[in-house]
Image (cartoon, rainbow, N blue to C red; front, side):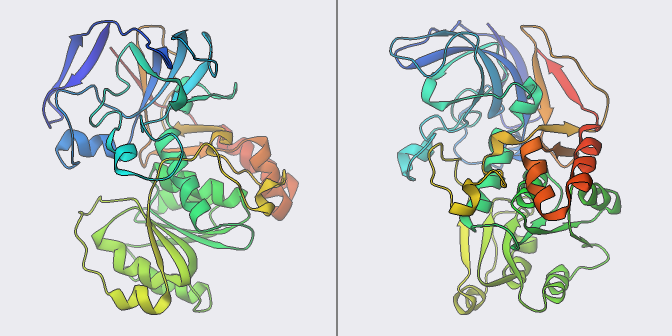
Length: 371
């Protein structure tokens, strides 16, 4: 089979290679990869900023595929199924452990930019019919990270959520938070991106270039209380302000290291305010959502998201053996399903919500075909 390999930590170190065709073992499914998505994690791997990378490496953690064969004792998927591949090969569900966290596709295991893959069937998630290959490939890391943040902070109607920036995780969090009835703050250095966030339902917009003290603005707009959740996507440059912006007993969900990995922290901000500082985990496949989330009013799974879309022209689904690569970066926005539209319409009025969804579905896509 054909694949792309990253032979060293450099954006110039991608090579086309021919690898042996994999054969599914017991408990595994053989996949024909149809799409892969680009996350900041993959950029960090390629630039040498991510630990534990094993070169040479087939890159890109996230992907979507078609099942073409299964090994013995597999009854959860069958040939012809459309699936997304969980990036954590040993941790599709369950509590954290060093072993579970040790293996990750696109880091120390082969990623998605290859024609064929044999993976554990336990790490596959069947796709809803309305998702294209590219849309599905953009969900695993970005959407499930956003969903986990909202779960961790118990975000529901009336809660306040701050997302920093307009990257893939931030945009997913914005939409899922709105589907849960939350009030969402969005920061960006671009007025254009803030307007796109407004079109996706953002309630409060703050341009951090004009208002560097965005944490003070959040406190001002919440009558001094602060927000229930800060989705910390940046790192050291914003971490202190995130601690100040969150309410007493609130959550700072830290996932980003765009500005570095070492931060100076005022522990009193955490101790006195009883702030919970959490890190991201892979999505759990078996959870018990709170009662308000079990009703049809609220979307509780990132897999109910309609689509991830980026600005440019539409590209048809590639024929085998090409792999479509969809960016999950700051250029992306996402759409909502009718279920999520219903969630929003329950709080904001049905006609307005449905019109917003149609507008979002009108955004165009950008994909790059490779191999």
